[in-house]
Amino acid sequence: MHIMIFDVPAESGGALSMLHEVYEEALANEDKTIKWTFVVSKPDLKETENIKVLRFPWIKRSWIHRLYFDNFVAPKIVKRNKVDYVLSLQNITVPSVNCGQVLYVHQSLPFVDHKFSFRENKKLWIYQNVIGKKIIKSIQKADYTIVQAEWMKRACINKAGIRNEIIEVIPPKVKVEVNKSFKPTNESLSTFFYPANGMKYKNHKVIVEAASSLKKTTVKKHEIIFTLTGNENEYISSLYERVKKEKLPIKFCGKMSKKEVFEMYTRSVLIFPSFIETFGLPLLESRNHGGIILASDTPFAHEILETYQNSYYFQYEDYRKLSELMTDILTSKILHNNTEKGMNGDGEKVKSLISFLIKCAE
Image (cartoon, rainbow, N blue to C red):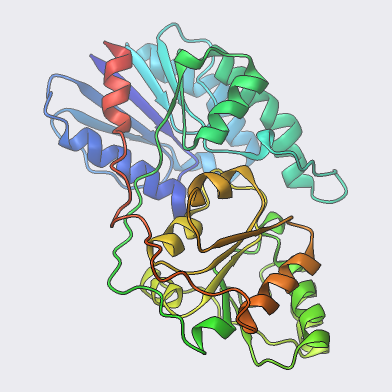
């Protein structure tokens, strides 16, 4: 059996981690009669006796190059190599091929309630209204679809009109090494932390507005920490200028290592106002460390934090509610539940994506 895995977008961050995770699973698979071919852009994966790697770095030159590859080159590769099954890790299926396909969908933009206008953000509008339609059509064409969370499964079923039996939930493998847990001290209960990039839907703005409101209503000393520099984009730059102008207690610390982020979970309250996520990883990481979490009232947050007693919610645009929750922590109206435990270690044992793929292909 010959299985071909497509992931040409993967170059860094979570996408690259996912590609390496699938590669390692294929490498460890005991059935060496299965031939694997990985189709990527720039990542350097090692070939073995039964694993071949096809690299196409020119795909990254522009969207035109990527569209040309997806629509003309990819189908030719599949046909030329006489592939039995395709796994696409890039949200869309390979067009014009007759073999079976499993589609991995990790882009949540087409399935969320918030709708971006073209004026508000051109890139996100395109993802929702143009690429989003391609994703939904791909779900309809695929033999099976894999998503990371139950809320995504329900959304895909509703949007694409597919049967429950052909969509599977396989959460990402999350390695959270908990060396020490959150401790409720004066410092930790007056420090708020948000590890996120500068994308607009990460919603740093609501924290800045809450901080501005909080400054007018409390004299309690506190600090808010962002993993940003302040010059990531125009949106973040405008927030940075506002923070400086109003002298808000927000510190732009820049990017942190995973070790530094985990250390912060033990001595700060997590604020997570993002309203577009497939799987909000910091929520799980903070939960595993046993910390207090203030999260946007969203399906993904409720799924990860279900039954967790140290979690509190606010509508993602409601800075007043967020400010109120922060005040309640500063004034001890919200207390840390010391009996509450996070998930054990890496969380629940997750299914193997490669095992599911082989089962589909048999």
